[in-house]
Structures are given as structure tokens and as C-alpha cells.
Length: 53
Image (cartoon, one colour):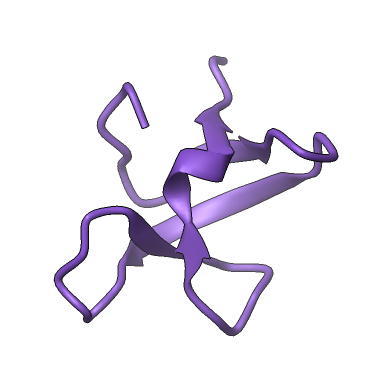
């Protein structure tokens, strides 16, 4: 992910364009994974783009 994410940022999944709300990093320590409000499992952040407002 190019831009640093902040809690509450909107990110768009590249594969289908669905919008999610970023809520924080994953506990694994791998910066490529984070959590979004809409899913219970960590997501792979390189598959997403930060939605510019």
C-alpha cells in the first residue's frame, strides 16, 4: 500500500472495487496484513488501494 493508512480510512479492493473501512494492523507483525471493519479475518493490504477523498 503506497499511502500510510490511518484508522477509519476507506480502502477499495482492487479485484471487485468493494469499499472497506480500515481499523488497524494485524497482530502477526506482518505489515502486509490488516483488519477492516467489514470482515472478521485479516486482509492482505496489497490487494487494496486507499480511497482518496
